[in-house]
Structure formats: structure tokens, C-alpha cells
Picture (tube, one colour):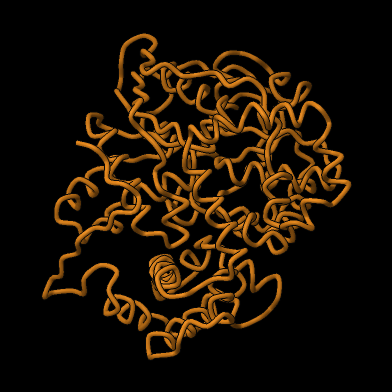
Length: 448
């Protein structure tokens, strides 16, 4: 069965017992859960930055309510919605169980349907969404981008400020691009070492696959060393995370259907990118109104696991060798708040002999990456990145561990601005170094 194009839409069904998914009635129902207590305020990154009520979850919910009652989507209202990172820290903090994650996604879909953005902003958004979800396009960009970085032209362009004058978003894209090396290609199947304990599918991802291929290679190796047959389906594409979080619902649904098809033959889908895993676990909501896909979406959501979550469930078998390094662990928002995966990565790291984990101050405040946020809201993202980098540096750790490619790029850029010499790795890369006995030189002397 071929995947629908991103432009296609899905029929929605309604139920007499509850409002249909994504309907105005569902929105109004969810809005009524907020009692405006204010527990969300100190957890909201934009409220922490500016102290503005309308840039807090409580304030944005008030604006959503105003729009539901007939207030049109004007520029100022949309700006407050656009400034939200969608980090879900407020969901964790809320004592009333307000589903702000669902509210902001429905509101952003409404914005995309009913609000006309300025031409330059539309052009930037189209560039982002016609590039990053498509791995072949990212792959075509790798060669020229690598040559650009190796030539030193990147430093000249940044000093000139040329891109900043053309577009702050383009300048942010250029600054955030990680140093590119060779890109190893994973085979379609990696056999378990020793007795097989499980068979899993692995999401290769878009940005993860092309900008951080070593993370995927380490993921496959660790899973294999822990006794898993690993399948990396060639038919997979973007999971739809960026589109879903930006309110591009039809596009997200098309990506989701393709992902569901690619992984229907495996028992567990292992994901090493926090934003992707979070979105795949929410396919049940994204496709709930599609009679042909709802059950299949629910099944995939149930089978999806973050790699740290899955390894914790599986339990250790391979020998952990000493790795004498101090690490600061960063909680990616869509791992800690959206998926509630907090202890598992720390437990995996704690199981490595001679490795010391140090906690980062204000761990629940977003680093400013948030999918495409650091491209579309570069000033606010930069402030948040600088705060996070200062807290990372304050730990005195030699290595920062993060589990999301956006976080890695965002914090790496902020650390560079501080002149901080701290290597960055994914949780599975640290575990891989321990299982293979590579020692601290795998990260500290040559970087990561």
C-alpha cells in the first residue's frame, strides 16, 4: 500500500459519547480543565524569560478561550502561540491535569488553517518543512555543507553578519549545523550478539540519520550487544514530529501512515530521538478520527519505546567496562515531560563503572531547541540556550549527555558562544563506549 501524499487529508468520525478528535467541542472541553492556579508559571520558559502573562500556559489558554468564543486570530494573538515552545513542562507541573499539549497542537492547527502569515515568514516555514523532514534532501545538502565548513567559509559568513541581515532564521540554521564527518550507512538488519533476547525495529530519523549518523550506529550496536536483532526498514521516512508540533496536521498524518506501514512487522519500535518518540506515541490521537488507520496507529503507539526506556525494560546483559568521565545529563523536554522517561537514562549511565553523573540546575526549563523553535524564534531560543549552557558549564562535567538531536545542536551552539570546551554525546554513545571498552578518549580527547 502506498503512503498518502502530505497534502492529503483524513476523514474524521464522530462519537455520540465524546467530542470528535480535533473538534471545537474537544477544544472547549479541554479548556474547561484549567483553573488558572498559576502552578505552570515558573515552569514555562517564556514566562521565565519575560514575565508576561500572555506568554505563559495560563495566558495562552485564556487566548484560546477568547478565540473559541469568537475572537479572530489576529497577529498579536498568534504571536503568543508561536512563542510557546511546546516543551510540556507545564503539563508535568499542572495539578489539574490540563492537557496543554493537546490544546497547543489543536490551536496551532487552527492557526495554520485560518491565519495568513507575512510572505517572508511563509517562505521560511516552507523552506524548513520542505527540507528537514526529507532525508534525501538532507543527504544532498551534506556534501556542500561539509565543504563549506571545512573551507572556513562558515566563520567568515558569521563574522560578516550577512545571513543575519537576510534572515535571522537562515542565520540560525547555519549556526546550528553540527560539524559533519563521514556518514556511515546502517545495514537493513543487525544480528544479535549471542542468544537473541528480542527483535526490534529502529527509527533512523531525518536529522538524526543525516546529521548524527554515529548515534544510529551506536544504537544498533548497543541493541545487538544486548541480544537484539535490529531491523532498520528501508521504507521508513520522517515520523512527522516537526509537522505535528507545528500544526501541519495533514502533512503529519501522511508521514505517520508511512511510518506505521514501515514498522508493522516488528514487535517493538526503538527510537533514539526524544521528539520523534513522543510523536509516535501520540499517533493514536493524530489518527483517532481516521477509521482506516486509528487501530493501526494505536498499535504502533503501544509498541514504541525510547531506547533508554527499552534497554531499562530489557535489563543489562553485556559487560559494562569502566569509563572514567564526569557527565552532565540533560533532560530533553519530549523525553522527560512528554514521555515521562527520566530515571531510565540516568540508571543506564549509573550502571557504567567509574562514570559520574552530575545534575544540571533547572533541568525542567527547555534549552530552546523545541523542534523548529530555534529556527523560527531565534532570539528567544538563544536566550534559553545561553541559560542552559551556563547551567551545564556550572556542573564542571567533561561530557554533556543529551537524547535529542535538536537539543544537541542547540546546546552545542550555546556552549561554543561561551567558549566552553565540553563534548556532547547521546546516552547510547556513552553506553556503546563502555560496552566496547573505548575509555574516556572516545569523547574527551578527540571530542564527540
